[in-house]
Length: 95
Image (cartoon, rainbow, N blue to C red):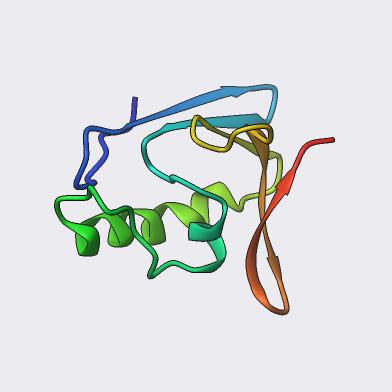
């Protein structure tokens, strides 16, 4: 487990095997919009600035090649990748 520094009790787990990585995120992101709109936070957050700083620090790792991300709050699209586009970061759900 990677120690989270969010404003909420959150969990970040990293599984690695054969060059593939899977980050399991619980209460780190609360909607896909937080990937492209990093200033957006949840209403019940205690320290939104710290939560954003943690997410910003994680994005570089989450966007590495051969990295999948699973997010508990992404209903219907739990597994995917965070990718860079000309418009910024976006969530690319697995089909």
